[in-house]
Length: 333
Image (cartoon, rainbow, N blue to C red; front, top):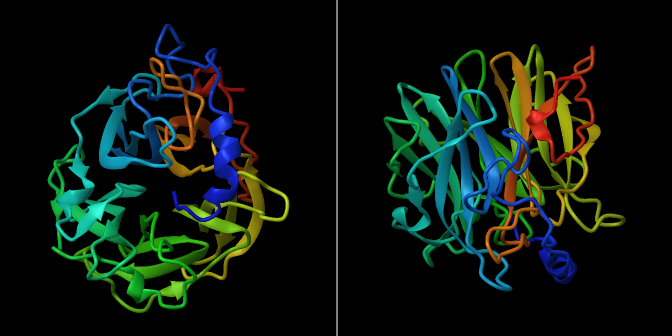
């Protein structure tokens, strides 16, 4: 959820905030979008643990014309994709003692009997710019504590980047051989192997930037094919982020661009994909800005998480996704 490109879209997006008739917390069909209606949420990251899906999100708290105001991360869970249980906040940005603000996009993963939480924050003046921390907990609902006492990835580790907020939006993936990888980025996309302890890099950082890459990468695998799904922006023709994807025969590439998966989120400049298989079905989580809570309409810094079913073609391609208000409340076609 970087700032790149936001400036030129900010005015239009703020003016296009959700109208008073947008969906609110009153009687709605379970499973319809947005799926979280008690708070503004963004940057969804699903994690399946047994028969429950946990969804990690950032908490949008922007007031009036603020761009972003995100201080903590939340988690919700479901067993049926229609009803969601909320929990206390799992962590604040400043729980990383070396961070000063900005609880941006995150992802949690289970390994070694623990839960590891990777998140983007603003580093203090010792390593200026955005950075990625890793926290750990014995439970998926936290609380999470800093696992290192320092950033896993800081801006000085990617010196070829073009701006100070390129090191954001971590996605973590464990392959069939037990090796875990982390990818991240804004404008530039990077990938690196993690050591078995999950809190150190194990080798070099490699750039893997696909066409129109903006931010929000997500790694997953189905069969023998690896998928890199991400927020994309064709700056020559598009005002708001879309979602595109690439595939590869190995986690190390080469990555082949496969095109756009879905359009922009309603009323939202940003979008952020998270993908999971749950109880035999595939889902893609996104966000838009179509939620109204009380007297607050959706806006660039007041977003709402959505979910749609995800389908594949016979050759492994992802079928285009239409973003709907019905979401998973609609019958399976």
